[in-house]
Image 1 (spheres, helix red, strand yellow):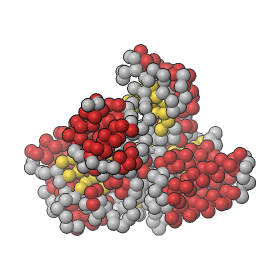
Image 2: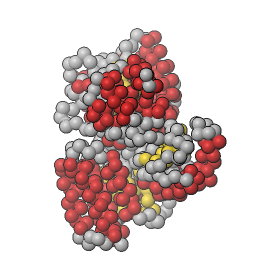
Image 3: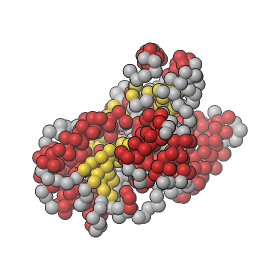
Length: 394
Length: 159
């Protein structure tokens, strides 16, 4: 039996940002290694979904000798079911800007960019206002760091960090091979820290209250709080900041409509959990907890029993087929074949055993695709096909 | 000089002529012209001293950089899972009936183009759509009719 944690509402991220000037001034007067240690001891992990330790990311980039480095805020929020980053940028933009500046101080950078997805074009004026206010204060205290917005143009894959660099360099948003990692070879080939919007907002909390306040929340391997974007069949869709490590069962109790059949954790590229798995699933990063622990970028989509899981999978696969950048064969052809395959089974042109072949294809994609997009198609595909097999066939 | 050529020159002056300035320039042309014609892509290539194929390759990668002629107002309806569950098809049908075009088409007067797009990030207020850069959420057929009527009465200009 997995440990059961109660849902705990937290209010850090959207708490007012009135003290940003003070926090910026205090933080940039501290030596970089002290700030890095603060982040490392908070055990903050990237909130975009992959969960790389933020302190370590800053440290690795700080250690590289190069006069030119970049700080990039990844606001290419494209995962289906995620909408928290927009809310952060429109409600507390100065927190994000402050953390970017502190990062610049830590790694030794003069230039920062916010990569904003094309769909959020309407955010630009207010964000530019905040950047203006921020720039003025930086000049006032003699801190040399400029932030600019770089607009995306509607490509999900550009949320992948190396694809984002390619896009900023004026190319097709095709992910690069890793290594080299961004800490040594990022935007324009220079050392780059790239953090998700929410990660930067959490950094602000840590600089404001210290690492301990943050570390005290959550469970082992999953410290702190996280914003969850709740949508689908729920009476209260919206954005909620919750402590990490909660059980999915408690989550469904709170947000479900009483008839929840499955929850998609982490968007289309995340994991689908059927009702029987609610009790043993916790939300957080992989660790030694008993039971299953699922990482998430914060997208929680609930499906009730009126929904056809075939339609859900069909929708995901169409999404992946369109958003696959097309450079590697397993992903480009794989996504097309999976979609054609489930349609053929549904129409009766292929028998049910064909589903096993498709499962093997997702496994191949998991091992051979170049980036997270192709690799993660297997997650929801296998969960839906294995748990809702009859819906795929009839 | 064609007006597009002048626009491209101005954009290049403003953003710079390096490869990493390509995306803002493409976006600038789309903002004015609504799409990138073959002619404008070749002009951009000339201005930035790039192979035209590279410009074409980059432009066609991004779903918001249209390379077919588009209407003055581009309607993009979100078709990803939550919007799809919450009645996206009804919204599409309403607009198709009102404008008498199908998804992917432009009205004969060149005022509207109707497209579907992937997740807009308004899943909690589904279904959602963009008209140019304006977001409309919690759509119902009635609400959509009201919104479109406003655009139509303004002769296809933004409200």
